[in-house]
Structures are given as C-alpha cells and as structure tokens.
Length: 260
Image 1 (tube, one colour):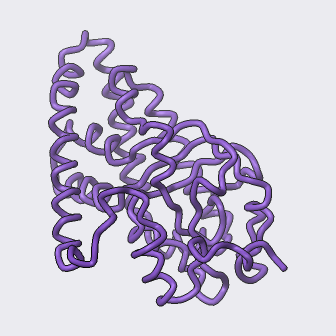
Image 2 (cartoon, helix red, strand yellow):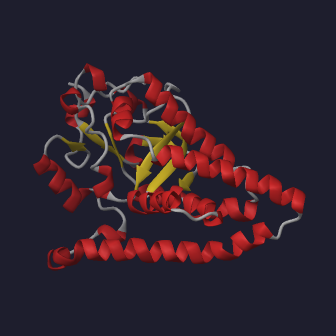
C-alpha cells in the first residue's frame, strides 16, 4: 500500500468533511488560529483584526529603515534601491500568477513548475542583496516551521528532483486548504508539515518582504499585493530536504505521484 493511503488523518484531505475537521482540529498550529466553540462566532473578525494589527506593526517597524535607505550615500542608495525595485517586480509576478497557472503546476506542468521555482529563487537572491540590517528582519525563526503547512498534491513545485527546494507554506490552515485542489480528480490534496522535512535552510516571511519593498512607492497595484500577502500569510522555506518516504509516496493517481 502506498504510504499516502496510510497517512495520519491529520495529513490527508480527501473531501469537504475531512477539510472541515482538519481546519478545526488538526492544522491550527499557530496559537491565533486556535479557538473555542464559544469563540467561533467571532473567529473571522478576530483573524481579520489580527492580520490588520500585525501589518500595521510591520509597517511601523520598517518606517525608520525606509528612511535610512533614503539617506544612504548616493552610490550605496542606488545599489540598494535597484535591489528593492527588482524585488518589487518579482514579488508582484509571484503574487499575480493566475490560479489556472498554479493549477497547471500542481498537475505537473514543467513550464509552470519552472516558472514558479525561478521566481522564488530570484526573490531569495534579491533579499540577499539587501543590507543585513534589513535582510535579517525578513527571516522567521527556525521554530516557526512547526506552525506552517503546505496544501499541495506534491511536496514542492520544483524541477530540482530531491534537492534543495524552495516551498511555499502558510501559517493559516484556511489558506493551506485553498491550494492543491487544482488537479481535481487527478489527485488528493495533502497537507505537508514539519513532519515531512528532514532539514531546511531559512524561512522567509513574504509579507515582511513585500511590506518593506512596497513602502517606497504607493499605488493601487502595490496595495493589492500587500493585502494579498497579508491574507495568504505565505512563507518561503528554502533549502528543503524532504524525507525520502514523503518524496516516494503516492497520494492520488499516477499523475500526482511526487517524483518532480
């Protein structure tokens, strides 16, 4: 029997009943996501307030850093702003990918897999070009991995077979449940967590990256991107070494087999 069919009930999502149980009982690893029965009526207002307050706090933290960049010596400022502007472009491309393209990648389309993987890799590279006093604020602590989940039909959308991958995760179980169903009848959605990972390098908080990068220019498109990363709560986990059993498992049909 394929390992996928023997997974813990907390890790597989095969129908809406299972999803509802996952969201309520198994996936909420972030403390803010844990609610009592008495709180369920206020759950979404509470979450929205938490997201909004957190975004405001990040903006407040970055305000003096933005001012510091603007006051850098001319040569250094030009170099840093070049990295920031390119980072804006890459994050924008990443956030604005069509769901149909994401679904194609989930289904195994190598063109879309390579596109997504390249965008993430280039975002990481641009972050590394920022001054250390900014760059260091964009990484989440290693133990954050215990709060993250990845909803998908395969471990990572990457063309690097079994290598050091970059994976999109979220600390919102609701968001995790939105991804990985694009294959429809082709596969079964899987929730990947720290239990599936042997090791990883860093965790990048994409919301912090976007809120800093877009603090240098304001328009409706930038506001949309900041709102999207605020709500999706995406983290890029770099240098992932998946467990061999996770890479080999088959959780749906042959098309969803994790060989890519």
